[in-house]
Structures are given as C-alpha cells and as structure tokens.
Image (cartoon, rainbow, N blue to C red; front, side, top):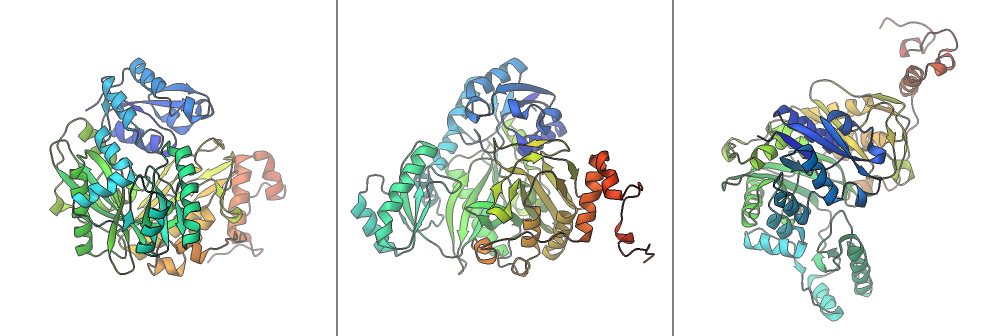
Length: 496
C-alpha cells in the first residue's frame, strides 16, 4: 500500500479520501488555495501546502504546482477526487511521468470515454444500446437538418467534449436547430476547448440510471448495481438512490453486463460509472462513462458493503480485485441528498456566509460526508456543494423516513442551504410512489417557496444562535437565563 498520498482536490471529497487513506494506513497531503487555508480537508490531512490564489487556474488546476508539492512532500501516489483534474488524461500522464502512481483509470481510458462521439462508438462495439443520433464531425447545416428530420423532433444538440449540461440544447422544431447548434458550439469551445457537437433523439421523461464498475489491472471487472439519479435540476443531480424502483433483478443484470463490457472494451482500471437512460417502456441506452469516483458513491457503499475509495487505492497499488459478481447483491435501500449553499426559493441562487451554528444528524444508518464546521466561511469561489447526507434503511420506505428525519435534524445557520427543499422532495407523494423521472423537479416544483418555520424550527434556531453567540442569550431567553423549550410553548410544563 502507498505510504503517502497527495489529495489533488478540496471540499467534502478531499475529506472523504483522506479518511479512506487513513483507514488503510496511508499518510495524506492536502493542497489548498488561499481562501481554503482553514478548510476542513486541510485540518484533517497530515500535511498541507498552499497552491495560490482562489482561481482554480492558479490553484487546484495548476498541474506544475501539484506535482511540485507531491515531490516536496515525498508522496508516492495522487488521488484526484472528482472534478478539477480527475478526468484529465494529460495530468494522469504527468503524474505517472513523475514516478508517482495515479489513483484512477489509465489515460487512454479517460480519453476514450471523454469524447461522447468516441464513447458512443465504444459502447456500440461492446454490444450496448445507444440513443439514436447523428455524429458526423464534418457535417454541414443541411446534413444536420436532414438527420434531425429522419430521427424526428424533439432532438438534443450535445457537445462531444461536454458534461454538466454545458453545450447542450433541446430543439423542438427545424427552424431552431441551426441556432441551437451554433450556440452549443460556442459554449462547448469556451468550456472545453472543443466545438464538436452531435445530435441525439430526445427521450421523453427518462430515468437516469448509472452502473458502478470496479476493474483491476489483471483483467477482472465487476459491477455493483445501479444508482438512480433522476432527480435533477438543469442536468445537475440533487437526490440519488439505490436500488432503483424501475430496475428489476433481470434488468440490473443486463445493464451491469453491458457496463462491464464497455469498461473492458476501453481497458478500464479502477472505479468508474457507466451512465444509461431508461425510457418509460423499459428500454435503456448508453449515455456516457464517468472515469472517476462519483459524488453519489456512498449509496452504493451502503447497499453493497464495499468501500470504493479503499478499492481505488488497492487497485492502484496493483492488488487483485477479490469481489465476485455472484456475491454482489443489494441489501436494503440507500438515499443521498446533495446539500448545497443555495437559495431554492430564489431560483437556486448560490449563497455565501459564515456557519454560525452547525449540528449534524446522527443515528443508525445516517452518514454525512461534508466540508462544514462551525465558523467556516462559505465563499463564492467554488461549487456550492457543501456535502452529502446519506441514509440506509431496510427498505425504501424506511430509508425515506430516515432521510426525512435526518434532514429535519440537520441544522446549518448563517448560510442559506437547500435543506428545506430537499425535505420537500423526499416527502413528496410522487417520490414515495417511485415516480422519479428527470422531469420530477420541473413538474412538481415549477416554483418553490420556503415553508414558514413552525414553532419547533424557530426554537431550534433560537437555541442555536443563543449557544453560538452568548450575547444573544438574553434576547432569546427574555433575560432570565432560561432557554425556551417546546414543552413550555403552551405556558406550562408538559409531562406527556
């Protein structure tokens, strides 16, 4: 096993990887920008090095500085987390060229699945179904129009190098196709340095189903079932769960086999995710492959009892995968909610602020992967994701109940978060019924208004603020030093 690992990332994923390394006896080295000097991942690591100013280009995306830190600290491996340089084949090559181990897939696999047109061809060769589309790199306007007519509207314009909804447009009629293509090309060129786009037939009200795979360098590859990630906003995932209510054991086996075939076809090593779309009729189609650890990996860890970060480290160290497909069966149900610094009532506008009061939910089957602590300053320099709240239950109904309670128990005061919105989603009747397509948020929450805080929530906030700022205690307690409780809310103690 590695002696010292550089974590080339920040936030909750850096904290998660640091803990995984420690459990296997690896020392860890954190890197940080100037505003992240007091971040939780910096506190957790054995060593920490400043990269530079806030801008990712001079900090978390600065390959030369990252490699210089790795050399100075005496690291023997680099874990990229997700985002930033996690799917950068050039950085993976630079890490290897520096004599370090790259805790991720081979650069050729990253490149092979990084461009959507090439990835679709790999999926075809592996025998997996793909969404009908048009993929010519040199096509003119008339060819795109003809292809869209043949497929039938609506269609999707997609960036070949895209991700996260960038370079993507939905087109419902021929008159708007060329304009959408031009706009997608501009956006893709700016975001990815590649203006190549292609067409896909739009699948109405699909589910987003992804399959987790693990592969070692000795030719062994397995899948760990599916995660449903259909609860999305602007192509960004909000709630994830496993198993999916729409996936039977037979369908899981077919999708898993296709995912493994795709991974083997591209020479994959490590942890990765093959993403599919599932239409209302039960047909599935390859979408893309994420050549990294996913944000939502904890739900798979809960249900399959497998630590994916441990396996990333072990596989990168050359160990053989000991998991066997026949032994990998789901147990219970797990749900994850992405907790973000954003105001759901203001069109999910990102928020900043100081965490004045912080109280985490606890109890059996409750896990929190987060970067938060009291006093942390949430800024505007990076993604608003603060962490993930994950629960496990014996079945889906139990998991929903546990998540609803955990969301109520999670207190973050000082910065606005999406916790109330997440509670509304989890307790919605359509979510309980398993009607979770990618249209869920748009259909059920065209506009969302924050619920008025009831007496328990107001009391919790008052108690928290009084604890965090003693100067406010007199205001909260009325000057008598006695903090109010729900039992006194009717003017007398209750012994019920």
